[in-house]
Length: 69
Image (cartoon, rainbow, N blue to C red; front, side, top):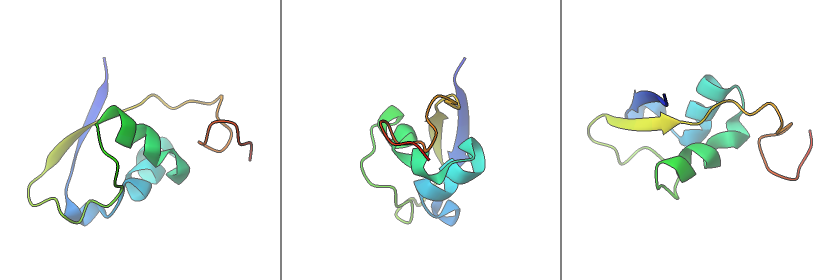
């Protein structure tokens, strides 16, 4: 079962969400991709939005495919 969270503008950006939830701010694009988003900025959210979170991928050293830490 996919894990979901609610976010608001107060959460800042998907960078912040990825850092808190996936322990890797560079994994923001994985959250964006799963939720059909292209912009990491959450400041336009006026109501809470539910986001699906990807599983933590330990195979990605830096969170970015093809890039190692």
